[in-house]
Length: 145
Length: 91
Image (cartoon, rainbow over all chains, first blue to last red):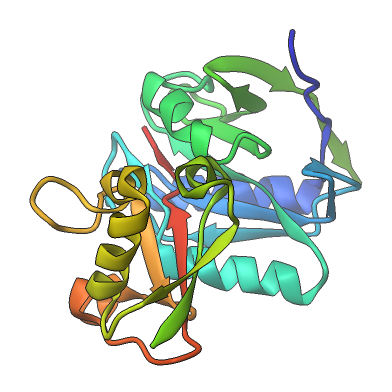
């Protein structure tokens, strides 16, 4: 592996909020942003805020995070001296692994952690990845109580 | 009128590595045309073949997405900041 994959630390409440937002978005994909301390493009500590955003595509197959929500989140992060740690989106009918489109689009933000929530089966599955140069590396997700 | 154009990391190589560049114009479209004259590789990343803002690019005048203003006709004035942020998107 040519790069390190950071550990993503979220609280149980944040984990629930992400999954709930994904269910609320059905039948379409849902998406949101993770805000927290970032130093030298790496998350430094637990996620401070999970921020649900709108999916401009309103599609079960794709997402495009609302540009206004994106700027608002960026400014909120900057105001607190934090940054964007990454994003999440749901897969409604496939597993919690980056699709070819996800891998292609990740080129723009290679420093991010990409959380994918699969709603395909009875229980939601949340996994996290770093994606660089077309290479996918899974990140450990640690739940803080 | 000079405005500051902020570029994402991946587009900086098209602008000699600069994180932000100064450009002039009365509208966002003018500003892009000014950039295109100096950095030909950059404009292909911002505007598609039909002359519209590329599908996966968000363009903001200060903090407002120009798609909700007047697209490339959105007026800019001295001191405005035009930010280019690639869309967060996938499948």
